[in-house]
Length: 405
Image (cartoon, rainbow, N blue to C red):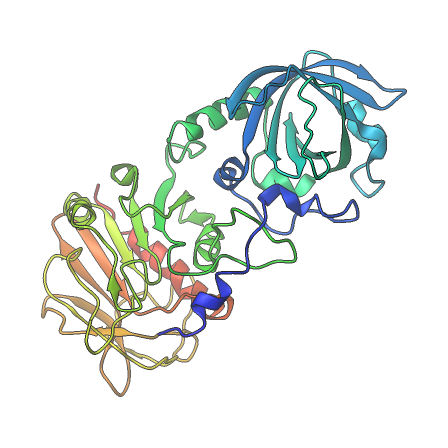
């Protein structure tokens, strides 16, 4: 149960790239942003080519080749690098030396009271800005000079590579494809999150921030055994591209929140079919009340959600399971749980329950070739997720070992 959730959802209101716009003194990006966040944050994306570079005047002109998202009406973009910051890893001189005539470039930007942009050339992200004024007189002739702020090496966490390769990634993702950058051996995880919990908070407010603390913790899992982890998040309850995933993680209160059941019948059927055919579904904590226990139409068989007080303690009921040992040792008192489950089937695997109420903390149910892993983990904010992230990693490792698809 949560009583302050609705208040915190009002905080995030600005645009991803406006972390650079408020002041030239702003520093580098704080956290890893996903490619999808960058795409969603933009009103426009253009593919271009470096037409000319003036190393003496610290300027370059970009020819706009294609509008990939939105209609920019631009034929060229004039870039002035003399306005940039002098800091470690960035300077106007360093930036202009990276540009070569004929080089492809991607310009991601948001058109609002100013033009705030994030640009990419081979292995390098940099930020530009064009102030439009209150009348929003955007000079689409391309005669206005966009001002350079700085190179941002932290964005290499989002993508690092050749521009032409990144252009293909951008096209594919805009076309609705998922796991575009995943390797063939990657463990593909789809996370339903962001509908009932607040996004992460930082010094920079971000308009399209969809990164919940729960998803951020899961994204920190880079490898599972020898397999790289490839994560995609969605707020769409139709669960796009579910059939391509190995694991579906149903985030905190994505099934039931404040007494409301949130999954449509079509999604219930899709989840059951996914498990039956060998997929693994992990269920984070869900909201139940005495009058309205969490619905279980997504689950094969019966289970009853119960309203429970927050708790941190559990008793291990399956001493042979490695769930609390690999790769992290988890002890009672080191997790955070809330509304739980009772009425499980005698064939279910019960790994841990609450000491006094004997309610389910974490368990599993086989169905067809796949598996449901059901938890009572409360993952609604930074503190609760910090308590649960080690066990979340263990759950992903456990799930990966039971994939039969």
